[in-house]
Amino acid sequence: MGEMEELRKEADNLKDQITEARKVVQDTTLQEAVAGTTLVGRVQLKTRKTLRGHLAKIYAMHWGTDTNCSKLCVSASQDGKLIVWDTLTTNKVNAIPLKSSWVMTCAYAPSGNMVACGGLDNMCSIYNLKGKDGNVKVMRELAAHTGYLSCCRFLNDSEIITSSGDCTCILWDIETGTEKTIFAGHLGDCMSLAVSPDFKMFISGACDFTAKLWDIREATCRQTFSGHESDINAIGFFPNGNAVITGSDDATCKLYDLRADQELITYQDSGIMCGVTSLAASLSGRLLLAGYDDFNVNIWDMLKAERVGVLAGHDNRVSCIGVSSDGMACCTGSWDSFLKIWN
Amino acid sequence: MDEMDLPQMKKEVESLKYQLAFKREKSSPRHMVKWIEDGVPEDPFLNPELMKNNPWVEKGKCVLL
Image (cartoon, rainbow over all chains, first blue to last red; front, side, top):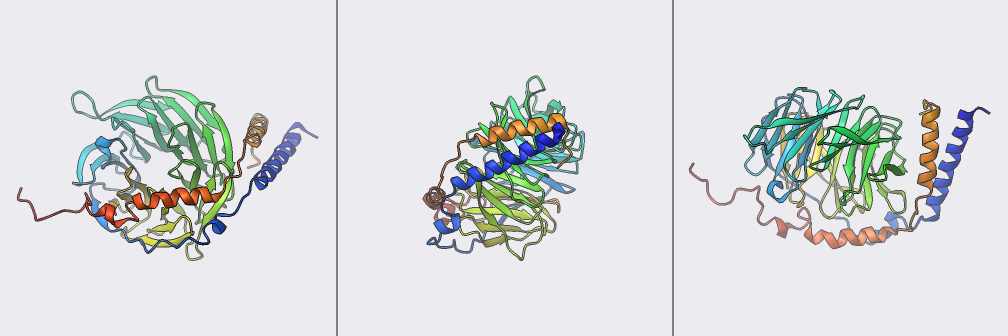
């Protein structure tokens, strides 16, 4: 037997053992645990603001988290601009022209001092918002990925994590502009990533239909979650950091429990046949807001796994969604070039 | 998914061994249910009281600029 064949057998054997280990810790299902829970009443959120200014499809948005910018958000559009918005007034705080208009992701640093973006240029560009002369300039261009930049998230002002179409994620040192750690293991394009609330872990969703949990400092893949039948486009941590939420082209979202290392529930409906593009949980984790290719956002009761509301208002695909850090508002971004604030 | 070369396959096997070693816990969904239910009263999307002063809604009359 060739070495490759032996390794393949070993891998399959290990996967079977993981499946068995998961069965051992299986407890009551989520459905059983919520048998007595009442479904949340119909959730109706209204558009409070429409952010107009982009001239092409919006691909990404991210809320600020620092108390000074908790009502600010950054958006990226293929009109070649990053815009930092004051969502209360709808004013543009910054309108940053990009070298490459093929942007696919953007991020706001937790400190509020920087934003980042990237896309088909395979790079992650970091912009300093608090430069001395008031001009926003490129601070660093992080280049090493051999595929498009699908997502980026700051850990702090000196570190950022990126995910790429080259199937890897990278932890960067922004100061030196170099790669600290390369997280390899996915067998398909990495489409999305999210950092845990304690900043020690991150999760990635990929076109190999799996989500992986990575230990940032140990530089290892701790757990792999399967079950989706197509690309995972969106991923997020459940608010308490103990579970992971994924959204896929297979038209479903799934909730995975980190401690038991297995799927808790699938959010699906026979009436939904299009892919999930984006997702965000409400502050308590009771609601899951998921954007779909059919231009809508469905609101799910995360415990009962039933739809309890819809955000309808965009004239094209909802590409991105985010809930503000205080849970008071949801922002959606669309290929129709608008962002909307809902609550 | 069978397009891995030998070095990648070796890394995949190493990774699977590491993932197998993870200490899985019998974590009952009831903990998650309780955590969520405890948080619902503070969730602005579920408690209308918290949105009585909605910063995104104009209050009062129009302002002359």
